[in-house]
Image (cartoon, rainbow, N blue to C red; front, side, top):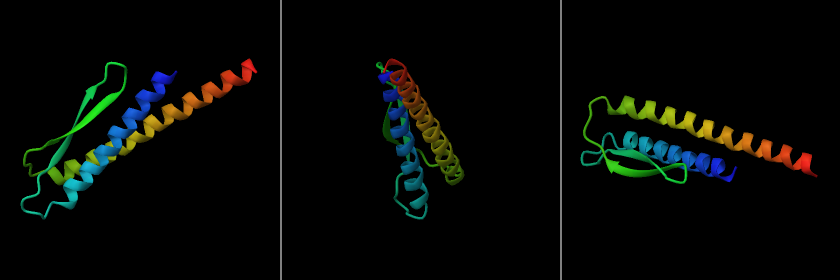
Length: 99
């Protein structure tokens, strides 16, 4: 059960980083030398995801892509939060039965 919670927490952290990067990219649209950033995800052997920030190339459609990515990250965060809530409910039910 703990692995499920850890996996969901790592997904929430990665989603949060993704929103922050999208905000960074949008906020720096008018900054001439600002570097666009992107989030690279990789699976962790014990379960979950590890995220790292890497430079992104110039892209004309980047502002729209960044806004869509931010929305997708919000949905991913909410989905992982739901997993944690459900896991907590299941654990509570199990403890109620055993008590």
